[in-house]
Amino acid sequence: MEGSQPADTVAVGDQPSGDAHTCTAHKRKIPPSSADANLGVHIANRLVEIGCTTCFAVPGDFNLLLLDQLLKQPELDMVWCCNELNAGYAADGYARKRGVGCVCVTFCVGGFSVINAVAGAYSEDLPVIVISGGPNSQDHASNHILHHTTGFNEYGQQLRAFKECTCCQVVIQHIEDAHMLLDTAISEALLRRKPVYIEVACNLADLTHPSFASPPVPYALKVDHTNTASLEAAVDAAVEHLSKAVKPVLLAGVRTRPARTRAAVLRLANASKYPVAVMPDAKGMFPEDHQQYIGMYWGAVSSPCTCEVVESSDVVICVGGVWTDYSTVGYSLLLKPEKMIRVDNNRVTICNGPTFGCVVMADFLEALAARVKANDTGLTMYKRIVLPTTEPLKQGDGEMLRTNVLFKHIQHMLTPTTSLVSEVGDSWFNTLKLKLPPGAEYELQMRYGSIGWSVGAVLGYCCAERQSHPDRRVVACIGDGSFQMTAQEVSTMLRYGVDPIIFLINNGGYTIEVEIHDGPYNVIKNWDYTGFVRALHNGDGKLWTAEARTEPELESAIAEAVQRRGQLCFIMVVTHRDDCSKELLEWGSRVAAANSRKPGGAGSHH
Image 1 (cartoon, rainbow, N blue to C red):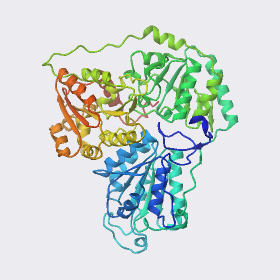
Image 2 (cartoon, rainbow, N blue to C red):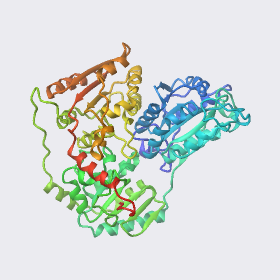
Image 3 (cartoon, helix red, strand yellow):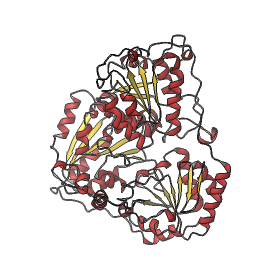
Image 4 (spheres, rainbow, N blue to C red):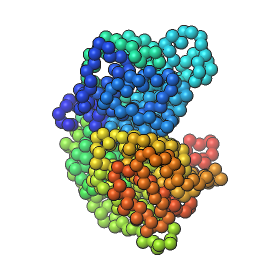
């Protein structure tokens, strides 16, 4: 697919996250348009064309007529969620797999509810199309005060709010402008890899217009262009710098997600023979079975020996890294800019030297791979110091299950068709230590870090996999505190027949917050979690539940769950409140130190 289309256009519709090229049409047939095609049907056709064949929605009176029209497109699956926040998280999860997601809500009470999830998608560089029903087009000049609004007789509050967390906003109040505004918003989402906001007046969705009468002209969108002279200068400077390096390292960050960029990183790795580490939010974006892969670089909480290799290197090529207080472990990294060649979106910076603009990341990596000289010194050093990994000893029948034993067994159940989703919290640190088999996928929300994200994201990811890779299965690790935020969306999973294996880790509170700053607010009410999920099931859907308090119970539950394809498997595991990974202890203390800096100094930022 990559080599068959022009390199300066973009399309969506295949994973990973849609770094495809020319979007002519989605592979499934779009019903032909006709003289009576209306705005809502046209929106549905456009979504299907770009590969977004599921829309997550919550009905409300301002979007009901629009939902009626979306239902007319047989290739667009509508998933009705319990609330707008979860619907937004589901669109986020779907976009991670399919390249673009969509959520449809009503005005104000729906839009303001979904906005946290949309902000997360913005932070994580995910194209999510937010469609909101809006007031009747005649109301804008009426001086009316409408229900669901904040009580003023102008209706721009929601639009202004979404300007803070979307890259493009359009309000469709006139049918004549609808075609142009819709295409403007969707193209911006695909090009900039950010959410967009589309507001549709509630009385326009079933109106026809000549611009909808024939199938829309396919998308062929121009992406950022590389300036040839700037590219050559950047590659020359990088090659000169690397030729003097003794033990260079390649470090991949989260903005290597697009398919072409991942392929370019792999090409550079193969050509250079440098050791390759990934930042934590980029786990799974470089094959972990590759002979040059040395693990995760996350400062003091890195994979064994990875930190030492990266921080002792004289040159680190960092591709697509995003440096926050979380990813820098409270700004405590020893890796400094003067030792880095930073390859960012449309920019290359050579250590503390020059910066070259107008250079597309993948273009630079491919050009550098063609000229770089192989140097495996860093990889040799890593192999000299790395120790074989060990597993925790087997526990006795009556001994309380330990967290490291839980994840030992999760490691054993991973296959090339597993997609592992980690909730915010100690699950981050435990899942990041797992080794992904070839083909396995991994997702977490590190930059935004909104607890409860994973429940909706699992729904969205499962819906995307069912359409494109039905042989795959999602495994999710969710803490009890996070689960209580968004638990009701398990009901939607049961309603639509998706079959993840969910590990509910019951340790009695917000463990990640405990290790940053403890207090009585980190203790939560204990639920009968399996009983709760069975109540959501209520005799409708395919569900299997289990509880595990010991290692033998866990082994039995996992063995049963992996056999139950087609059923949502919910396994509650009980661990001690203070049983967390050593990495969380270290990370939490460093982040706490960064949070508690006193006024008067700028602090040490990466």
